[in-house]
Image (cartoon, rainbow, N blue to C red; front, side, top):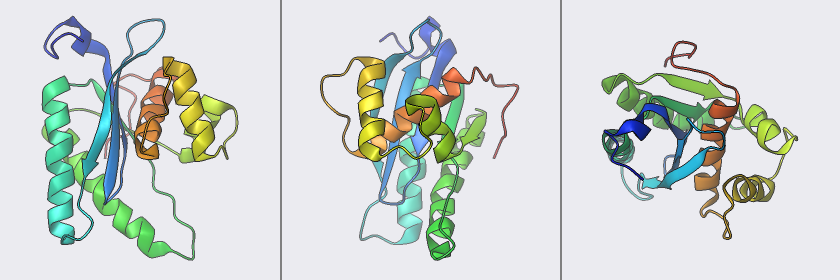
Length: 175
């Protein structure tokens, strides 16, 4: 991979799967016919820490990825919560909020995608399982091992969804 300030930086997409404990991220080079995997990993919020510290950890980690790779767009999974668990959506909203804040601080547009849309684009099935998504990511990038944890594969899927929909920074829904 070239330096983020080099020519490749012009088409880097950052996909983020927000979570309070584990936030998955995936960076792809999207300017070519076949997107290339640049880097993927996790930002840990911390399991047994105060909410404020978890959010700071997520913000700082995502900000660092942005500083290092200077993506042109950030794609994030939209919130979904079953009506029986509204607290989950509220808690996840905190994580999404600090991710959007990091993007805004670096003046990078944020695009939001529903999980069913992401799954449908990569597998043809809007209700695909985690394993099916991981298999799709292996197939897309020619990987011999499954990305772990599943949050990493999800983040890569979100970045690919953005790429395949052909969106650019002028079409996005900013946070």
